[in-house]
Image (tube, rainbow, N blue to C red; front, side, top):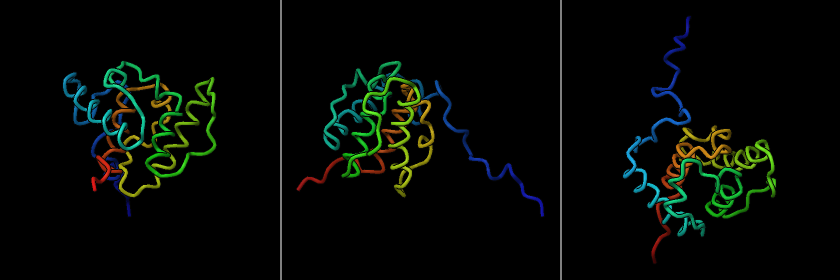
Length: 148
Protein backbone atom coordinates (compact mmCIF):
# COMPACT_ATOMS: atom_id res chain seq x y z
CA UNK A 1 0.00 0.00 0.00
CA UNK A 2 1.30 3.43 -0.91
CA UNK A 3 1.62 6.13 1.72
CA UNK A 4 0.46 9.64 0.95
CA UNK A 5 3.47 11.44 2.41
CA UNK A 6 1.91 14.85 1.81
CA UNK A 7 -0.79 14.01 4.33
CA UNK A 8 1.88 13.67 7.03
CA UNK A 9 3.14 17.23 6.57
CA UNK A 10 1.97 19.85 9.08
CA UNK A 11 -0.90 22.07 7.98
CA UNK A 12 1.28 25.15 8.41
CA UNK A 13 4.93 25.34 7.44
CA UNK A 14 7.37 25.53 10.37
CA UNK A 15 8.47 28.92 11.65
CA UNK A 16 10.90 30.74 9.36
CA UNK A 17 13.25 33.45 10.71
CA UNK A 18 11.89 36.90 10.03
CA UNK A 19 8.38 35.53 9.54
CA UNK A 20 5.38 37.15 11.17
CA UNK A 21 4.94 36.20 14.80
CA UNK A 22 2.05 33.72 15.17
CA UNK A 23 -1.04 35.44 16.50
CA UNK A 24 0.60 38.86 16.23
CA UNK A 25 1.84 39.20 12.67
CA UNK A 26 3.95 42.27 11.99
CA UNK A 27 1.67 44.62 13.97
CA UNK A 28 3.95 46.59 16.31
CA UNK A 29 1.17 47.40 18.81
CA UNK A 30 0.19 43.74 19.08
CA UNK A 31 3.84 42.79 19.53
CA UNK A 32 4.28 45.35 22.32
CA UNK A 33 1.10 44.06 24.00
CA UNK A 34 2.47 40.50 23.85
CA UNK A 35 5.83 41.72 25.17
CA UNK A 36 4.05 43.45 28.08
CA UNK A 37 2.20 40.23 28.98
CA UNK A 38 5.40 38.21 28.76
CA UNK A 39 7.38 40.77 30.77
CA UNK A 40 4.90 40.64 33.66
CA UNK A 41 4.65 36.86 33.49
CA UNK A 42 8.45 36.43 33.52
CA UNK A 43 8.78 38.72 36.53
CA UNK A 44 6.04 36.91 38.47
CA UNK A 45 6.69 33.28 37.52
CA UNK A 46 10.46 33.16 37.01
CA UNK A 47 11.75 36.21 38.86
CA UNK A 48 13.31 37.49 35.62
CA UNK A 49 13.12 41.17 34.83
CA UNK A 50 12.92 41.85 31.09
CA UNK A 51 11.37 45.12 29.99
CA UNK A 52 8.94 45.51 27.12
CA UNK A 53 11.67 47.43 25.27
CA UNK A 54 14.12 44.54 25.68
CA UNK A 55 11.52 42.08 24.36
CA UNK A 56 10.80 44.32 21.36
CA UNK A 57 14.41 44.69 20.19
CA UNK A 58 15.20 43.51 16.63
CA UNK A 59 17.62 40.94 18.11
CA UNK A 60 16.99 39.63 21.62
CA UNK A 61 20.65 39.49 22.65
CA UNK A 62 19.76 39.10 26.34
CA UNK A 63 18.23 35.69 25.59
CA UNK A 64 20.55 34.59 22.79
CA UNK A 65 23.25 33.01 24.99
CA UNK A 66 20.71 30.57 26.42
CA UNK A 67 21.54 31.29 30.06
CA UNK A 68 18.47 33.42 30.76
CA UNK A 69 16.25 30.92 28.94
CA UNK A 70 17.72 28.20 31.15
CA UNK A 71 17.05 30.31 34.25
CA UNK A 72 13.42 30.80 33.18
CA UNK A 73 12.96 27.12 32.33
CA UNK A 74 14.58 26.08 35.61
CA UNK A 75 12.33 28.40 37.62
CA UNK A 76 9.22 27.05 35.89
CA UNK A 77 10.32 23.42 36.32
CA UNK A 78 11.43 23.92 39.92
CA UNK A 79 14.93 22.60 39.24
CA UNK A 80 18.04 24.06 37.63
CA UNK A 81 19.02 23.22 34.07
CA UNK A 82 22.37 21.45 34.20
CA UNK A 83 25.26 21.20 31.77
CA UNK A 84 25.30 24.83 30.65
CA UNK A 85 28.28 26.74 29.30
CA UNK A 86 28.45 29.50 31.93
CA UNK A 87 30.40 31.89 29.72
CA UNK A 88 29.35 31.10 26.15
CA UNK A 89 31.82 32.66 23.74
CA UNK A 90 30.76 31.05 20.51
CA UNK A 91 27.56 30.45 18.61
CA UNK A 92 27.93 26.72 19.33
CA UNK A 93 27.99 27.23 23.10
CA UNK A 94 24.97 29.58 22.92
CA UNK A 95 23.13 26.97 20.86
CA UNK A 96 24.14 24.27 23.36
CA UNK A 97 22.67 26.29 26.24
CA UNK A 98 19.43 26.87 24.34
CA UNK A 99 19.21 23.20 23.42
CA UNK A 100 19.52 22.19 27.10
CA UNK A 101 16.38 24.21 27.91
CA UNK A 102 14.53 23.02 24.81
CA UNK A 103 15.16 19.38 25.77
CA UNK A 104 13.49 19.95 29.13
CA UNK A 105 10.56 21.78 27.50
CA UNK A 106 10.04 18.93 24.99
CA UNK A 107 9.25 16.61 27.90
CA UNK A 108 6.26 18.72 28.92
CA UNK A 109 3.15 17.12 27.43
CA UNK A 110 1.19 20.36 26.95
CA UNK A 111 4.08 22.29 25.36
CA UNK A 112 3.48 22.90 21.62
CA UNK A 113 6.35 21.73 19.41
CA UNK A 114 6.41 24.74 17.07
CA UNK A 115 9.46 26.44 18.59
CA UNK A 116 11.11 23.53 20.43
CA UNK A 117 13.49 22.65 17.61
CA UNK A 118 14.74 26.15 16.81
CA UNK A 119 17.98 26.24 18.82
CA UNK A 120 19.78 28.00 15.94
CA UNK A 121 17.21 30.81 15.74
CA UNK A 122 17.14 31.17 19.52
CA UNK A 123 20.95 31.38 19.68
CA UNK A 124 20.79 34.12 17.02
CA UNK A 125 18.32 36.08 19.18
CA UNK A 126 15.52 35.83 16.59
CA UNK A 127 12.60 37.72 18.20
CA UNK A 128 9.90 35.66 16.47
CA UNK A 129 11.33 32.38 17.71
CA UNK A 130 11.97 33.66 21.23
CA UNK A 131 8.66 35.48 21.71
CA UNK A 132 6.83 32.52 20.21
CA UNK A 133 8.63 30.13 22.56
CA UNK A 134 7.98 32.32 25.61
CA UNK A 135 4.32 32.64 24.58
CA UNK A 136 3.97 28.87 24.39
CA UNK A 137 5.77 28.48 27.72
CA UNK A 138 3.31 30.94 29.29
CA UNK A 139 0.41 28.91 27.95
CA UNK A 140 1.91 25.57 29.03
CA UNK A 141 2.97 26.63 32.53
CA UNK A 142 0.05 28.89 33.25
CA UNK A 143 -0.25 32.66 33.02
CA UNK A 144 0.20 33.38 36.73
CA UNK A 145 0.81 31.88 40.11
CA UNK A 146 -2.30 30.95 42.05
CA UNK A 147 -3.40 33.75 44.37
CA UNK A 148 -4.37 32.29 47.74
